[in-house]
Length: 410
Image (cartoon, rainbow, N blue to C red; front, side, top):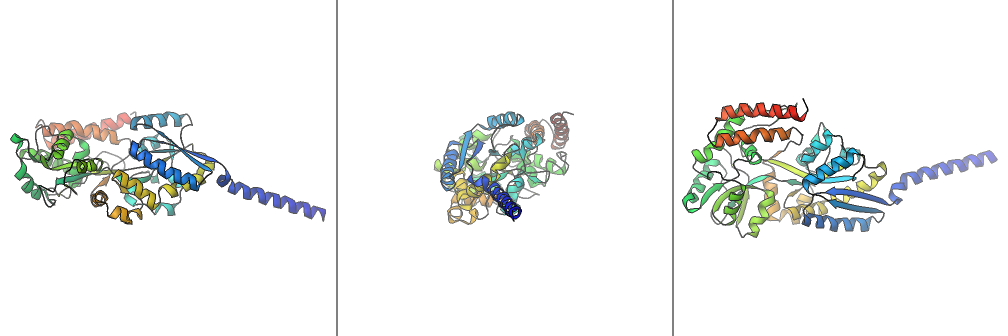
């Protein structure tokens, strides 16, 4: 009898210890550390949400440390290589390629469930996908280039390039500082929109560059034609020129990214935002889009997983994701957030959601650096008439291969 009682006590003790062990993360005081590169107003927004989260979860403390973009990348790399650093990194998705190549972060499915991921827009999640795994939990998607037009000058957004030429030509008077159409013509981030319109893709499935293609030749020819054939734009037009002319009411149409839209409203421009028009022989211009979100350090302690799940559920709820997206004028990634009246009735959000469908997720692998470096000089040479689109495409491909070999140390 005594042995039976003793055995029962042991079993009770084992059960109690097991139960306590499972509940331990809830009862422990947990600190979640985050390194981020949020602008000041975004940081304040984060702090307001974090205060409510900590009030609802008094055993969890959220501590954030701010860095500028390059500092965030290099400091996290240095710390994580030493097995240190924060639990989370928040920033642009192009960090994913670098951090995964160095095995410094872990797949987000190590912490959150597949069911949780179903709450988010698939194209936003895919922006942080490498080698079949999701490495980033995004809260906003955007950064896309769109067609911006002054509604006091142009009542309805042109849907085709021919329509654009027709309306923009009425305002094209460079001698008097007036322009129908301007954009950052030598910047590859703008150029890839035309490349995409002709069906171009920068990589194949095996990450080989695909720049020497019919799509590239057509896109380069179209870029050259904008000034030489259609008589729009200006010699050496760039970002600052397009931005300033549009704000001053001296440009009818420009191409610029989601980060700039609120500044034009602040400048008093009667702003219209629309997808890029269809190009001759192609589709709508297809610029890159990208996300910002959370990446989980490879060294995040196992006992913090439950607290981290609570953090994600709270910060990426429909209400809080909408709050974050509205402040940034970028689209929320939580699908239910997009159905909230606060989002549906916001003019910039409506524009963001209307244009995000005409984008392609930007590749986030490290080899993308070689693509940008290969495109830029050849694009400039075509615009200046120093080479042909066909020769430029061949040279781009060669430079991209050489650049990728350098990145790989080959």
